[in-house]
Length: 190
Image 1 (cartoon, rainbow, N blue to C red):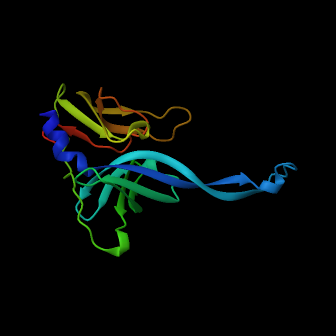
Image 2 (cartoon, rainbow, N blue to C red; image 1 turned 90 degrees about the vertical axis):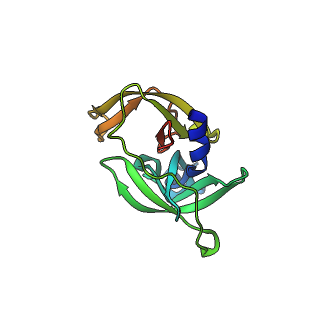
Image 3 (tube, rainbow, N blue to C red; image 1 turned 135 degrees about the vertical axis):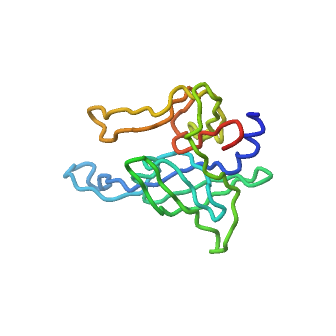
């Protein structure tokens, strides 16, 4: 069942990378260190996501794109061809750490993308097998499995955090840096 679910869904899972603007010392001021800076674009966050609409809408975590000046989505086409598309932020829900992106089609042409219909979490059971798909450590699409360890978990913010995570699914499926935003599926691929 896990293999069938992965085959059914893997083309709808994407990798996300961002660029961000940072302030760096001006080149000619390095020796004098007067504190003046200039903006410079550099590589930012890495994450994962899922295409949930055939028009190229992607759901991911808000923290993946929180400081992005540009967002890029890498998808895999049938046959294994990888393509990268720039994406635009459509909506963000900071309280639930969710963001909706829309891929920008090449040359403005309308495209249809493989997608994963959004599932429901209200029928999950403790101990149920789940599948996490994402792009950890920039290795490419990776699959891990585990179980639903707990439901309706909440975590209060720590000293340096402002975000309270509420009503989340706890799993023991391996989740590593870069997996953020990727889907958690049941064995039917929902």
